[in-house]
Amino acid sequence: MRVQNLVFTALFAFTTFGQAPDQDINRVFHFANAQAPQSRQEILNMIRAIAEIQNATVDNSAGILAVSGTSGQIAMAEWLFYNMDRPANAAPPDPGALQFTVAGATNDVARIFYLTNTPTPQAVQEAINAIRAVTEIQRVVAYNASKAIAMRGTVEQMAAIQWLIPLVDRPAGQPSSTHEFAMAGIAPRLGTTSNIMRVFYLQHTETPQAMQEIVNLIRSLGEVQRVVAFNGPKALILRGSADQSALVDWLVQQLDKPPAAAGPNTTVVAYQMAPNPNPYEPPAVRIFYPSHIDSPQALQDVTNMVRAATKIQRAVSYTQTNALALRGTGDQVALAAQILQERDKP
Image 1 (cartoon, rainbow, N blue to C red):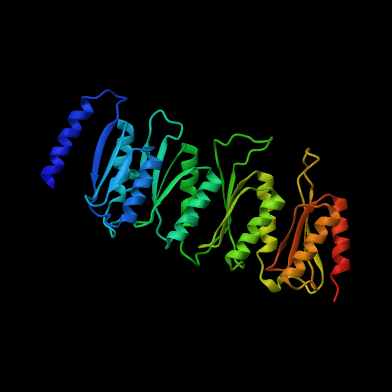
Image 2: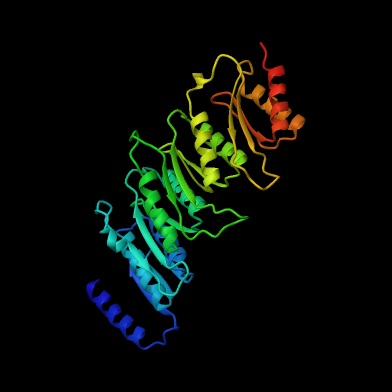
C-alpha cells in the first residue's frame, strides 16, 4: 500500500506541474478509517458541497474516493478528507487546522467544527438547520461518525458561527441566560437591518411541540422569519432587527412559564411596539390568558373567532399556558378583548 501511495504521489506531482492552472486534476484518496458505506457517502457529500467538486465518486469495493477539479478544489478536498477519515476515538485536531481559506472567492472561508454535546444524528441535523436559518449559510454538511460539521461562507458568517456553536453544543442542565451577537455584513432589507442574533434558553417549555408553538408565535407576531427551535438544550435561536429582538425577549418572558403561572381570572399583558413610520405595522401586542377556555380546541376556536371578527391575522394560540397572543391596532385589540370577555365565562 505504501509503495502504491508513493507511486501515486509521484504521478500526481508530475501531472500537477505539467498542467495549465485551469486544467482539472485527478486525485484518488484511500479510506483508512471510514469503512461504513454511509460514512463514505457523507464524506463524498461534504467534498461535493464544500469544495464545490461535482466530479467525485466513491468505490466501496476498492475503498477509494476519486475526485477531479482545479488545484484549489483538490487542496480543499484533501483538507476535508483527512479531517474526516480519522480514527473514531481520535481527539479533534488543533483548531488552527480546522479553517481553510479560498483566495478570490466570495464564500472564502471553510470551517470544521466538532460537536461534543450533540449526541444523535437528529440533534446534529437540528444544529445544521439552526445554522442555515440564522446565518444564511447553505453549504453546511455533517459527518456523523465524528459529529463533525463542515461549512463554507463569508468571514462574517464564520464569525457568527464561531459564536453560535458553543451556545447550541452544550451539556444538558447547564446554567443559561440570553446571549446576543451583532452579525456584520448584513445588507439592509426594507429599511431595516436584521443583524441581531439571539439565543434564548427556555426554562419551563418542556416539549418539542410547545417549543414549535412559541416559534410559530414569534414568526407571526414579530415577523421574524429566521427563528428556529433547538430541542436538545431547549433553545430558541433567531436573527432579526433590534426592535424584533426586543419584542421576542418580551414574548419569551411572558410565555416561558409553568402551566399554572396564569392568574385565576382572565388576565392580559401588553407590549407597545416602537414608533414605526410604516402604517401597515400594527403597534399593539397583547397576550390574553382566559381562565374558562380550558382546552386546546376551545382555545383555537376562540382564536379563529377573534381573527374573523377583528380582521387580525396575527393571532396565535399557545396551549401550554392557555394563552392567546395577537398583534393589531388599538381598535382591533379592544374588540378582541371584548370578544374574549364575552366568551371566557364559566
